[in-house]
Each structure stands twice: as structure tokens, then as C-alpha cells.
Length: 433
Image (cartoon, rainbow, N blue to C red):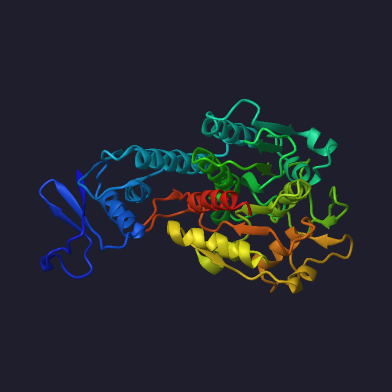
């Protein structure tokens, strides 16, 4: 089916608030003067819902942004579709291809089942993707280290090791350094820390089946940050950024960690395990300690961390928690421009004492039971960033994955946030902030 964009309002015969009409073998998406990404995406979802699998975008109004919006709505996890894009100028066409490559990477890798996507496979695919995006950079400007299994314990990454030791698939940490300056002493613009739990049973704090059936997507934070960095690199990122992926399976076995176990981290903080299903913060802590040691200008971590955030904002928004007003403002400004949905949740100093333990410095679950889960999870992470009040932002990625479709997204991974985070990196690099 051919798809046209039209700035003309539909005839009254189609009814009020109609934005999609049909004419012979063509569908027409009616838009106002202001670009509305969601309207075009909704139209694409409607067409897919009618069983249309092949779309040809025709006419004069298409550009990279509108093509990308259509593609986002037309996409399904089975990838049983085809979109023929119109001829765009070289710049617009390149932008569209970069968006599709990064978005596809994020959605495809999140949608993979955990018997395929083990922690090691996740890390290797992340490296391969970044290498592809950085192919125009000179050799030596991209370096990485993969730390696996008992080597994690030997090097002091006790959070990742503890969470992952119960699985037959070894836990893994990726430390990747994109340094286009070529100067090994160049300052670090940003450190990105992603949660990569490739499957989460909850451990001995076992999840019920209806909470476990989407846990292949518990590595969404790692996928999101990898996709965003790759997109920024493809679009000309010229500042040094380090990526840390903290990857494990949270399984039950005779080797698995248990309640009341105590973990001692590199920075000396001791943590009592009060809930094995609060494992994401345990692996992120290792990444944050390492990121903080690089003295970056700012740190962003991303994780599918709490049910509390999802209950607060649903599947539609990523939750933003930080005390750095400027960093939050910059992120939300980019989100508004890309029309991706982020929503700020509270994080304050009084949340930090709520992660208490009688046997360790802190516990990995908030107290009392009525404590704000997304805020106390952030409070836990703050113990692993020295100056947590500034230059650090936590994303609780509530919009990573949908168990059912809606008017914008098919069932499965969404890729929401890739464009926003890439633009934030590019803008801050340009500003030298």
C-alpha cells in the first residue's frame, strides 16, 4: 500500500478527529503544520492492525523524522514487514538509516529470548554494534575489556558476581572506552552504566509467572545505552564516552545468593541482601563505582529497575531521578524535541536512610514496606557515586518493553529513549559541558 502525508484536513464524511483516510490503493495520513510524531506512528499501527505488511511512502512531505515515526509504528517483533522509503536528500537519508540501525539493535536484542541472549552474548553483540557505528574512526580509538565469571570476583566486582553466580551462564562486565581524541589522557565527557540482567527469576525471592514472563527484557537499560551511544557515534560524537554493562542471569541453584548474604563493594560499602529480586541495583553498583572513578563530566545509568516506577508512569514513560537540576532539564529538553516520553520522579536526601540494615551499611530493599520504591532504589545507588547530588542521573526504564500492544507500539521492545540520549551526548559534547 502506498502511504501519503497530506497537510489538508480530511473530508467531513470521514468523521471528526480522523487522521487516516483511504483512496483507492493509497492511505493518506493527515497532519497539521506542526510535526506530530505520535500521529504518524498511530497511523502506521492502524495499518499494521489491518494486516498490511508492505508500505511504500510516497509524496513530497516525507523527511527523516516522519519516516522514522512511521517505521516505529509499523515495526513488529516478528519483522514480517517491509517499508519502502521515499527518495530523501543525502543528509536526511543518512539520518534515517542511523536511526533505524540503532533502533533496530535495541528492539531486536531486547526481544531475543534468554536462551539465546546470555550475558556473554549480550556483551559481544554490544561490542559488535559499537564497532560498526565507529567504523569511520581510526583504529585504537575504541577499546574494550570483557571481564567474565570468577575474574569478576578476583577484580572486586562483587555485585555482578554475587547475582550471576547461581546461573550456568557466567556473569560478565563490559568496560568500553570510545575515545575519538586519540589522547589516552583525554577527559571523559560521560560514563554510561547499564543493567544487563538477561533473565530475572527473582532468585529465592521468586517472581510469580505473570511477573516473570517479560524478564528477558530486564537487560533493557544496557540495550538502551548501547543503542544511544552507537547512534551518537554514527552522528559524529567527538568526545570521550565510557560504557559499562553489568550483565548476569538471576537464577536459583545451590550456588545462588540468598537473603541475608552480605556483599562488600570496592568502595567499602557493605550491603545486606534483603530481597534477591532487587538484584539490578546490586550489579549497577559495580558499574557506578567504576564510572565514578573516571571523573566524567556526568554519569547516566539506565535500568529496568523497579515495579514502583512502572506503577507510577505506566509503560509509556521512562522515569528520571536526579538531584542535578541542569542535567534533568537538559535531558527533558532533548526528550521534548524528539517527542520521546520521560517523566521526573522524586529523589531527595531523606530517601537515603530508608535503605537500612542492622547487619551492614545498607540493605538492598527500602524500609518500611510503604517506602517509595523507585526513590529508594535510586537512594541505594547513590551510595556508589561520591558526589551523587551533581552530574549523575538515574533512568528507571519503565517504557522499555510492552507485554501487549497499544495505539503506538507493537508487543515487545520499544526503543524509547535512544534518540533522546544520543542527542544529549551530542549536545553536551558540542557545548563542552
